[in-house]
Image 1 (tube, rainbow over the protein chains, first blue to last red):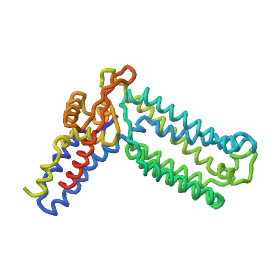
Image 2 (tube, chains in turn purple, brown):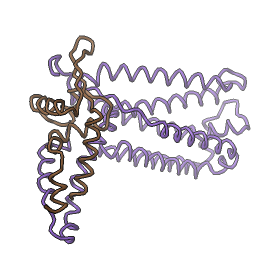
Image 3 (cartoon, rainbow over the protein chains, first blue to last red):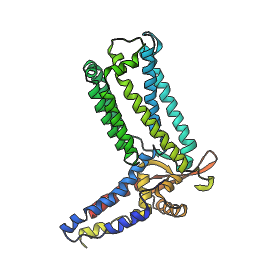
Image 4 (cartoon, one colour):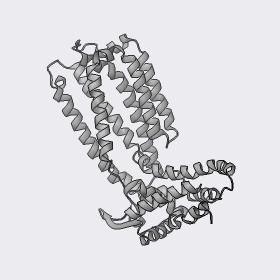
Length: 259
Length: 98
Protein backbone atom coordinates (compact mmCIF):
# COMPACT_ATOMS: atom_id res chain seq x y z
CA UNK A 1 0.00 0.00 0.00
CA UNK A 2 1.47 3.34 -0.94
CA UNK A 3 1.20 6.37 1.25
CA UNK A 4 1.17 9.57 -0.82
CA UNK A 5 1.53 11.80 2.24
CA UNK A 6 4.91 10.89 3.65
CA UNK A 7 6.34 12.54 6.75
CA UNK A 8 9.49 13.69 4.97
CA UNK A 9 7.40 15.24 2.22
CA UNK A 10 5.31 17.12 4.74
CA UNK A 11 8.43 18.27 6.58
CA UNK A 12 9.91 19.64 3.36
CA UNK A 13 6.70 21.45 2.54
CA UNK A 14 6.40 22.88 6.03
CA UNK A 15 9.96 24.19 6.02
CA UNK A 16 9.73 25.71 2.54
CA UNK A 17 6.33 27.26 3.07
CA UNK A 18 7.15 29.05 6.29
CA UNK A 19 9.53 31.68 4.88
CA UNK A 20 7.96 35.08 5.47
CA UNK A 21 7.02 36.97 2.28
CA UNK A 22 8.45 40.51 2.29
CA UNK A 23 6.01 42.11 -0.15
CA UNK A 24 2.53 41.54 -1.66
CA UNK A 25 4.21 40.39 -4.90
CA UNK A 26 6.20 37.80 -3.00
CA UNK A 27 3.09 36.83 -1.10
CA UNK A 28 1.38 36.09 -4.42
CA UNK A 29 4.37 33.96 -5.39
CA UNK A 30 3.93 32.09 -2.13
CA UNK A 31 0.37 31.10 -3.04
CA UNK A 32 1.42 27.77 -4.60
CA UNK A 33 3.39 26.98 -1.43
CA UNK A 34 0.26 27.59 0.61
CA UNK A 35 -1.72 25.31 -1.65
CA UNK A 36 0.99 22.70 -1.30
CA UNK A 37 0.81 22.71 2.48
CA UNK A 38 -2.98 22.80 2.56
CA UNK A 39 -3.14 19.87 0.15
CA UNK A 40 -1.30 17.33 2.35
CA UNK A 41 -3.36 18.38 5.39
CA UNK A 42 -6.55 18.19 3.34
CA UNK A 43 -5.43 14.83 1.95
CA UNK A 44 -4.91 13.54 5.48
CA UNK A 45 -8.33 14.82 6.51
CA UNK A 46 -9.86 12.95 3.53
CA UNK A 47 -8.03 9.68 4.17
CA UNK A 48 -10.48 8.25 6.74
CA UNK A 49 -13.33 8.72 4.25
CA UNK A 50 -11.36 6.92 1.53
CA UNK A 51 -10.41 4.22 4.05
CA UNK A 52 -13.99 2.92 4.04
CA UNK A 53 -13.41 1.48 0.56
CA UNK A 54 -9.76 0.49 1.00
CA UNK A 55 -10.75 -3.19 0.73
CA UNK A 56 -13.32 -2.64 -2.02
CA UNK A 57 -16.26 -3.47 0.27
CA UNK A 58 -17.93 -0.11 -0.41
CA UNK A 59 -18.16 -0.88 -4.12
CA UNK A 60 -19.07 -4.53 -3.53
CA UNK A 61 -21.94 -3.39 -1.24
CA UNK A 62 -23.20 -0.91 -3.84
CA UNK A 63 -22.90 -3.55 -6.58
CA UNK A 64 -24.80 -6.12 -4.49
CA UNK A 65 -27.60 -3.63 -3.76
CA UNK A 66 -27.97 -3.00 -7.51
CA UNK A 67 -27.89 -6.77 -8.02
CA UNK A 68 -30.66 -7.11 -5.43
CA UNK A 69 -32.76 -4.60 -7.39
CA UNK A 70 -32.00 -6.54 -10.56
CA UNK A 71 -33.17 -9.77 -8.95
CA UNK A 72 -36.39 -8.11 -7.75
CA UNK A 73 -36.94 -6.58 -11.23
CA UNK A 74 -36.34 -9.94 -12.90
CA UNK A 75 -38.83 -11.65 -10.63
CA UNK A 76 -41.39 -8.88 -11.22
CA UNK A 77 -40.97 -9.20 -14.98
CA UNK A 78 -41.11 -12.97 -15.07
CA UNK A 79 -43.76 -13.83 -12.47
CA UNK A 80 -47.53 -13.50 -12.53
CA UNK A 81 -49.22 -10.17 -11.86
CA UNK A 82 -50.50 -11.17 -8.41
CA UNK A 83 -47.44 -13.09 -7.27
CA UNK A 84 -45.45 -12.24 -4.12
CA UNK A 85 -42.88 -10.30 -6.18
CA UNK A 86 -45.45 -8.09 -7.85
CA UNK A 87 -46.97 -6.96 -4.57
CA UNK A 88 -45.40 -3.79 -3.18
CA UNK A 89 -44.29 -5.44 0.09
CA UNK A 90 -42.58 -8.31 -1.76
CA UNK A 91 -39.76 -6.24 -3.21
CA UNK A 92 -39.51 -4.08 -0.10
CA UNK A 93 -39.07 -7.15 2.12
CA UNK A 94 -36.48 -8.54 -0.29
CA UNK A 95 -34.46 -5.31 -0.31
CA UNK A 96 -34.74 -4.94 3.48
CA UNK A 97 -33.39 -8.47 3.97
CA UNK A 98 -30.55 -7.76 1.53
CA UNK A 99 -29.63 -4.46 3.23
CA UNK A 100 -29.59 -6.13 6.67
CA UNK A 101 -27.48 -9.03 5.36
CA UNK A 102 -25.06 -6.58 3.73
CA UNK A 103 -24.83 -4.39 6.84
CA UNK A 104 -23.99 -7.25 9.18
CA UNK A 105 -21.93 -9.12 6.57
CA UNK A 106 -19.69 -6.14 5.86
CA UNK A 107 -19.41 -5.38 9.58
CA UNK A 108 -18.20 -8.92 10.22
CA UNK A 109 -15.79 -8.68 7.27
CA UNK A 110 -14.28 -5.45 8.61
CA UNK A 111 -13.92 -6.97 12.09
CA UNK A 112 -12.28 -10.17 10.87
CA UNK A 113 -10.24 -8.99 7.87
CA UNK A 114 -9.80 -5.21 7.57
CA UNK A 115 -9.26 -4.05 11.16
CA UNK A 116 -6.55 -6.63 11.99
CA UNK A 117 -4.69 -5.70 8.77
CA UNK A 118 -4.87 -1.93 8.46
CA UNK A 119 -6.56 -0.75 11.64
CA UNK A 120 -9.86 0.23 13.15
CA UNK A 121 -11.70 3.50 12.53
CA UNK A 122 -14.97 4.75 13.96
CA UNK A 123 -16.40 7.60 11.90
CA UNK A 124 -17.89 10.77 13.31
CA UNK A 125 -21.67 10.84 13.44
CA UNK A 126 -23.28 12.90 10.68
CA UNK A 127 -24.93 16.11 11.85
CA UNK A 128 -28.72 16.10 12.10
CA UNK A 129 -28.86 18.79 9.37
CA UNK A 130 -26.95 16.56 6.98
CA UNK A 131 -29.32 13.66 7.67
CA UNK A 132 -32.40 15.88 7.29
CA UNK A 133 -31.08 17.43 4.05
CA UNK A 134 -30.33 13.98 2.57
CA UNK A 135 -33.71 12.55 3.61
CA UNK A 136 -35.50 15.66 2.27
CA UNK A 137 -33.71 15.54 -1.08
CA UNK A 138 -34.41 11.81 -1.47
CA UNK A 139 -38.11 12.23 -0.59
CA UNK A 140 -38.46 15.20 -2.97
CA UNK A 141 -36.78 13.20 -5.78
CA UNK A 142 -39.07 10.20 -5.22
CA UNK A 143 -42.19 12.43 -5.25
CA UNK A 144 -40.98 14.25 -8.37
CA UNK A 145 -40.27 11.00 -10.19
CA UNK A 146 -43.57 9.34 -9.24
CA UNK A 147 -45.60 12.40 -10.31
CA UNK A 148 -43.85 12.67 -13.66
CA UNK A 149 -43.33 8.99 -14.37
CA UNK A 150 -45.14 9.06 -17.69
CA UNK A 151 -43.05 11.96 -19.02
CA UNK A 152 -39.87 10.48 -17.59
CA UNK A 153 -40.46 7.20 -19.38
CA UNK A 154 -40.82 9.07 -22.65
CA UNK A 155 -37.37 10.52 -22.08
CA UNK A 156 -35.88 7.37 -20.50
CA UNK A 157 -32.79 7.42 -22.75
CA UNK A 158 -31.90 11.01 -21.94
CA UNK A 159 -32.45 10.36 -18.23
CA UNK A 160 -30.35 7.19 -18.35
CA UNK A 161 -27.55 9.14 -20.02
CA UNK A 162 -27.74 11.95 -17.43
CA UNK A 163 -27.94 9.52 -14.53
CA UNK A 164 -24.89 7.65 -15.86
CA UNK A 165 -23.02 10.96 -15.98
CA UNK A 166 -24.16 11.82 -12.44
CA UNK A 167 -23.15 8.39 -11.12
CA UNK A 168 -19.75 8.62 -12.83
CA UNK A 169 -19.13 12.07 -11.32
CA UNK A 170 -20.14 10.87 -7.83
CA UNK A 171 -17.96 7.78 -8.21
CA UNK A 172 -15.05 9.89 -9.45
CA UNK A 173 -15.38 12.35 -6.56
CA UNK A 174 -15.96 9.74 -3.88
CA UNK A 175 -13.65 6.92 -4.92
CA UNK A 176 -11.50 7.56 -7.99
CA UNK A 177 -9.84 10.69 -6.58
CA UNK A 178 -7.87 8.58 -4.13
CA UNK A 179 -7.30 5.53 -6.38
CA UNK A 180 -6.19 6.71 -9.83
CA UNK A 181 -6.96 3.48 -11.75
CA UNK A 182 -10.61 3.82 -10.71
CA UNK A 183 -10.98 6.74 -13.13
CA UNK A 184 -11.23 3.99 -15.76
CA UNK A 185 -14.19 2.54 -13.86
CA UNK A 186 -15.79 6.02 -13.64
CA UNK A 187 -15.34 6.39 -17.42
CA UNK A 188 -16.77 2.90 -17.99
CA UNK A 189 -19.84 3.78 -15.87
CA UNK A 190 -20.44 6.87 -17.98
CA UNK A 191 -19.79 5.14 -21.30
CA UNK A 192 -21.90 2.09 -20.48
CA UNK A 193 -24.81 4.36 -19.46
CA UNK A 194 -24.46 6.17 -22.78
CA UNK A 195 -24.37 2.92 -24.76
CA UNK A 196 -27.47 1.58 -22.99
CA UNK A 197 -29.26 4.90 -23.59
CA UNK A 198 -28.54 4.52 -27.31
CA UNK A 199 -29.77 0.91 -27.49
CA UNK A 200 -32.86 0.48 -29.69
CA UNK A 201 -36.13 -0.28 -27.90
CA UNK A 202 -36.28 -3.69 -29.61
CA UNK A 203 -33.23 -4.84 -27.63
CA UNK A 204 -34.91 -3.89 -24.36
CA UNK A 205 -38.01 -5.81 -25.37
CA UNK A 206 -35.96 -9.03 -25.47
CA UNK A 207 -35.69 -8.71 -21.68
CA UNK A 208 -39.44 -9.11 -21.30
CA UNK A 209 -39.84 -11.78 -23.94
CA UNK A 210 -41.95 -14.65 -22.62
CA UNK A 211 -43.02 -12.66 -19.55
CA UNK A 212 -46.41 -11.45 -18.43
CA UNK A 213 -45.76 -8.10 -20.12
CA UNK A 214 -48.04 -5.37 -18.90
CA UNK A 215 -48.79 -1.86 -19.84
CA UNK A 216 -48.59 -0.12 -16.47
CA UNK A 217 -46.00 2.57 -15.82
CA UNK A 218 -44.24 0.70 -13.00
CA UNK A 219 -43.57 -2.24 -15.32
CA UNK A 220 -42.22 0.04 -18.04
CA UNK A 221 -39.95 1.74 -15.50
CA UNK A 222 -38.53 -1.62 -14.41
CA UNK A 223 -37.82 -2.61 -18.01
CA UNK A 224 -36.17 0.78 -18.66
CA UNK A 225 -33.94 0.55 -15.56
CA UNK A 226 -32.97 -3.10 -15.93
CA UNK A 227 -30.08 -2.77 -18.44
CA UNK A 228 -28.55 0.21 -16.58
CA UNK A 229 -28.55 -1.65 -13.28
CA UNK A 230 -27.11 -4.71 -15.01
CA UNK A 231 -24.03 -2.93 -16.41
CA UNK A 232 -23.44 -0.71 -13.38
CA UNK A 233 -23.71 -3.55 -10.86
CA UNK A 234 -21.27 -5.60 -12.97
CA UNK A 235 -18.76 -2.73 -13.10
CA UNK A 236 -18.99 -1.96 -9.38
CA UNK A 237 -18.63 -5.61 -8.39
CA UNK A 238 -15.70 -6.11 -10.74
CA UNK A 239 -13.90 -3.02 -9.48
CA UNK A 240 -14.68 -3.92 -5.84
CA UNK A 241 -13.35 -7.46 -6.23
CA UNK A 242 -10.15 -6.21 -7.89
CA UNK A 243 -9.64 -3.83 -4.93
CA UNK A 244 -10.30 -6.66 -2.50
CA UNK A 245 -7.80 -8.98 -4.18
CA UNK A 246 -5.13 -6.22 -4.24
CA UNK A 247 -5.85 -5.38 -0.60
CA UNK A 248 -5.54 -9.01 0.52
CA UNK A 249 -2.36 -9.40 -1.53
CA UNK A 250 -0.68 -6.24 -0.19
CA UNK A 251 -1.57 -6.45 3.50
CA UNK A 252 -1.02 -8.93 6.32
CA UNK A 253 -2.80 -9.23 9.66
CA UNK A 254 -0.61 -7.63 12.33
CA UNK A 255 0.87 -9.68 15.17
CA UNK A 256 -1.01 -9.41 18.49
CA UNK A 257 1.79 -7.33 20.04
CA UNK A 258 1.82 -4.87 17.14
CA UNK A 259 -0.21 -2.35 19.05
CA UNK B 1 7.62 42.16 15.80
CA UNK B 2 5.14 42.66 12.95
CA UNK B 3 1.79 40.86 12.89
CA UNK B 4 2.94 38.18 10.39
CA UNK B 5 5.90 37.32 12.61
CA UNK B 6 3.60 37.27 15.60
CA UNK B 7 1.22 34.85 13.83
CA UNK B 8 4.11 32.50 13.09
CA UNK B 9 5.39 32.72 16.63
CA UNK B 10 1.91 31.88 17.88
CA UNK B 11 1.69 28.62 15.89
CA UNK B 12 1.15 25.65 18.17
CA UNK B 13 4.57 23.99 18.07
CA UNK B 14 3.24 20.75 19.48
CA UNK B 15 0.98 20.31 16.43
CA UNK B 16 3.40 21.94 13.99
CA UNK B 17 5.87 19.03 14.11
CA UNK B 18 5.14 17.05 10.88
CA UNK B 19 4.65 13.67 12.53
CA UNK B 20 2.23 15.04 15.11
CA UNK B 21 0.51 17.15 12.45
CA UNK B 22 -0.20 13.93 10.54
CA UNK B 23 -1.55 12.21 13.64
CA UNK B 24 -3.79 15.12 14.62
CA UNK B 25 -5.05 15.56 11.02
CA UNK B 26 -5.94 11.87 10.78
CA UNK B 27 -7.68 11.86 14.15
CA UNK B 28 -9.52 15.11 13.43
CA UNK B 29 -11.54 13.46 10.66
CA UNK B 30 -12.70 10.49 12.77
CA UNK B 31 -14.34 9.84 16.10
CA UNK B 32 -11.88 7.13 17.11
CA UNK B 33 -9.05 5.16 15.49
CA UNK B 34 -6.57 2.59 16.69
CA UNK B 35 -2.77 2.63 16.75
CA UNK B 36 -2.51 0.29 13.77
CA UNK B 37 -4.62 2.61 11.61
CA UNK B 38 -2.41 5.62 12.44
CA UNK B 39 0.71 3.56 11.77
CA UNK B 40 -0.64 2.38 8.42
CA UNK B 41 -1.92 5.75 7.24
CA UNK B 42 0.98 7.90 8.42
CA UNK B 43 3.82 5.50 7.60
CA UNK B 44 5.51 6.44 10.90
CA UNK B 45 7.27 3.60 12.74
CA UNK B 46 5.89 2.19 15.98
CA UNK B 47 8.39 3.80 18.37
CA UNK B 48 8.17 7.29 16.88
CA UNK B 49 4.39 7.12 16.69
CA UNK B 50 4.18 6.05 20.31
CA UNK B 51 6.44 8.92 21.38
CA UNK B 52 4.36 11.49 19.45
CA UNK B 53 1.14 10.13 20.92
CA UNK B 54 2.57 10.38 24.45
CA UNK B 55 3.41 14.05 23.88
CA UNK B 56 -0.06 14.76 22.51
CA UNK B 57 -1.63 12.87 25.42
CA UNK B 58 0.43 14.83 27.96
CA UNK B 59 -0.77 18.07 26.39
CA UNK B 60 -4.39 16.88 26.68
CA UNK B 61 -4.89 16.82 22.89
CA UNK B 62 -5.36 13.07 22.56
CA UNK B 63 -7.21 10.55 24.68
CA UNK B 64 -5.72 7.04 24.78
CA UNK B 65 -7.80 4.01 25.70
CA UNK B 66 -6.17 0.60 26.15
CA UNK B 67 -8.60 -2.21 25.44
CA UNK B 68 -8.91 -5.63 23.78
CA UNK B 69 -10.29 -6.75 20.44
CA UNK B 70 -11.15 -10.32 21.36
CA UNK B 71 -7.89 -11.48 22.93
CA UNK B 72 -5.75 -8.97 21.04
CA UNK B 73 -4.67 -5.76 22.83
CA UNK B 74 -5.88 -2.63 21.08
CA UNK B 75 -4.97 1.03 21.64
CA UNK B 76 -7.80 3.37 20.73
CA UNK B 77 -7.13 7.05 20.20
CA UNK B 78 -9.35 10.07 19.83
CA UNK B 79 -8.87 13.83 19.80
CA UNK B 80 -10.12 15.65 22.88
CA UNK B 81 -12.18 18.83 22.66
CA UNK B 82 -9.00 20.80 23.39
CA UNK B 83 -7.18 18.90 20.64
CA UNK B 84 -9.89 19.67 18.08
CA UNK B 85 -9.96 23.33 19.06
CA UNK B 86 -6.16 23.59 18.92
CA UNK B 87 -6.01 21.99 15.45
CA UNK B 88 -8.69 24.37 14.15
CA UNK B 89 -6.73 27.32 15.57
CA UNK B 90 -3.50 25.96 14.08
CA UNK B 91 -4.98 25.74 10.57
CA UNK B 92 -6.45 29.21 10.89
CA UNK B 93 -3.12 30.70 11.94
CA UNK B 94 -1.21 28.80 9.27
CA UNK B 95 -3.51 30.17 6.58
CA UNK B 96 -3.07 33.66 7.98
CA UNK B 97 0.71 33.29 8.12
CA UNK B 98 0.99 32.14 4.52
